[in-house]
Structures are given as structure tokens and as C-alpha cells.
Image (tube, rainbow, N blue to C red; front, side, top):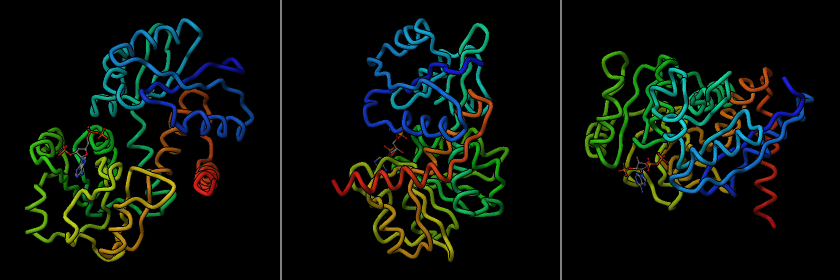
Length: 283
Ligand code: ATR
């Protein structure tokens, strides 16, 4: 392995991405040197931009919105979890083709189980949302042997479709928002994989009473302040809340180890990014 290899995160927009910062901190923490940049691809030109990157010596990439499906489609080989998600956030040049993976679910699981110390085994899990974010994490969540995962989405048909790939083999089911409320089910772990927090909205009616005792509410979004979902969850009785910063760093660690052969410690980097976010808010 060369001492300095070339990596990048592809997205549109990608200006806000913390991935270059995270990977620079990882590299420093394990005494390696990497070159990691942001690359904006034009919509419809992901393949062209990836080719230019490769021509410049690029050997690995992370991929964010809206190109995760494109990355999966153009890769010559794929991990099982990328195949299940139909989307990839990780590319690595292997011999003569791009290999792709999806490290989002593993990042979420490690943040919940290792950093937040909440085992998913035998737990009742509610997964809110049925878009790309939910699709990327449901497979790895089910592999942790929860008692059940219930998927609820504003558009119920998308939840039914997402679950259909898993329900024969795993304890996964779909419910409409109305059915969830009527059945007054309670969950140990509630994961918000919708984009509702981007607009300051809630993914469920304000009155929804869904938290078991000692429940964890996890928002895959993150920000300088607790998200709307986190504040609501605390009001509704969740014991603990977390945002998606830990997942972001852990999915990056899952990328780093595949490219560089060393798994960096995520916890100190999460703490550092949290401090940097807080100082951004005070300036
Ligand atoms: P992503 O890749 O972030 O998952 P997406 O594929 O567009 O983006 O999916 C967005 C998800 O957030 C969907 O599950 C969407 O619900 P619909 O399928 O009904 O559109 C959900 N979502 C977005 N805003 C929401 C809101 N205000 N309330 C509830 N769900 C919301």
C-alpha cells in the first residue's frame, strides 16, 4: 500500500461533508497519510466524475446523496449488504474494477451497540422511514437478532415494499402510521430514518406514545442542536436520545479499515467532532 493514496467523497451538494475531516483525523490517529477530497459530481454525471477521479489516481471513494444508487449500479462487484440496500456509500478499486459496499448499517449498529451500549438482541425496534436511509440500515439491524423490527412510513406502501425483501426470513413487518397509533405498541429502540428533521417536522403525530421504559430514540440526522425528533422523544418518555453523528463517524471507520487495513478508534473522533460542532454554533 502506498503511503499516500487518493480518496474522495462524491455528492451533490458535498460542501457540507465532514468526511474529509473525519478521514484526516483517522489517518493522524493511526500514523498514516491519506489524500481525501470533496468531489461534486453533476447530476447524471457520477460515472464521468468517478472516471476522472480514477484517471487522477483515485483508489477509493465514499458516496453520498444523491449518488448511492449510481455507485452500486456502476460497481463491478458488491458486498451482500450493498446488494440488499441496492445502494453503496463505499467504493474501492480492486484489480480491474470498482468494488462497492454499504457501511451505513454497520455504522449505525456499532454506534448503538458499542458507543451507546444498547444491545439490539431481543429488542423491539421501530424503524421510521422507508427511503434510502432506511433501506441502507434494515439488513444490518436485522442481523443483530432483535425481537422484531417494525417499519412505519408516512407513505405506507413504501414500508410494505421495503419489508417484503426481509419478512420471510426475519421478524420484520410494516405498519401504517394510523395502525401504529391504534395498536399503541411500545418499542425499546426507535430509529428515525426519515428526513423529517431537515424541515423541523416530526415523522409521527405529536401525541404518539411509543416508548417502552429505558427506550433509546435515535435520529440518523445530526446537527449543532438536538433535532426536533430528539426533543419530542424526550417529552414522550424516551430515556435516552442520540443523533447520527456517531453513525457518521462509524460508517467512515468501516470504510477506512477496508481501504487502509487499520480500524481507527471512533469514540475520540466523535467527541472531537461534537466539540467542533458546538464551537461552530457559538461563532
Ligand atoms: P433518504 O435517502 O434520506 O431516505 P428519501 O429516499 O427521499 O431520502 O426518503 C425520505 C424518507 O423520509 C421517506 O421515508 C419519507 O416519507 P415518504 O416515503 O412518505 O415520502 C420520509 N419523510 C420525509 N419528510 C417527512 C415528514 N415530514 N414526515 C414523515 N416522513 C417524512
